[in-house]
Image 1 (cartoon, rainbow, N blue to C red):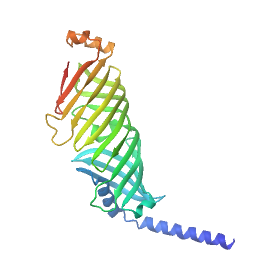
Image 2: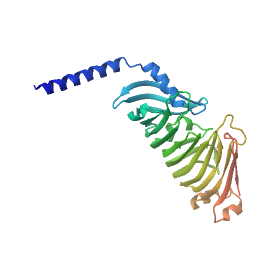
Image 3: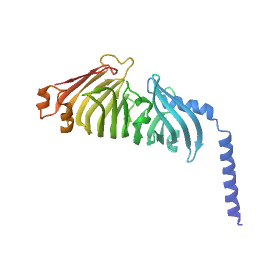
Image 4: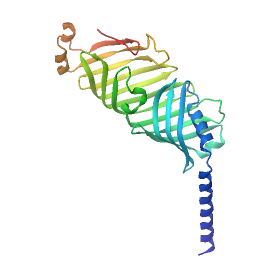
Length: 281
């Protein structure tokens, strides 16, 4: 074996020993608490818990069992989340991280910019996700007696000003209502698309379009997410276009004037989340 080859093997051996030593002596507990704190920083009321943490290559961290909640309500649980810094940004005031992981049988990825000083909030966040199962998200289980299912995809961006904007799509969706609507217990949707934004504790829904088996709809408005969600929590307006077969089922349940209309039917949803009022015009 040549001298150069021997040196290469010795260097590889030393790197391997160093890597094993770092892995065995890795300070997972202090880092787990620090990472959870940094993940929640900058979003009021947000709490993050991490079950496990270990180093990963290329340089980064592999997190398991990441639970996200807000004001005591479970929102999402990620089975795996890998976070890696862009090495050149480590010497700057703002560090840029890339992340990717799995959540509710789907995938999530994106980037985040975090200031080096712990007391400063998150600078920016961009994320996208695909094939996330709605029924596997804790925040959407048993919403006031209703159940949601389907495949969620979309993207979101968060800026330092506190505004969050994004687009979402649900494919092959279904909602099972806690209380029947139009004498119908469940509705199926081929696609649901919407633009969303979150400012403080108000969710703004724009350009919502539903294409379903029983009806199509357009919807927009606001949803107050702040605790407690009172009488003005919901303020949504839109138009529904029931399909002919569904209209035939509703005969006798709706006023004759509505049954004769050929155009879309305007509607409004207002009131608290637990017992919203639906009116048709």
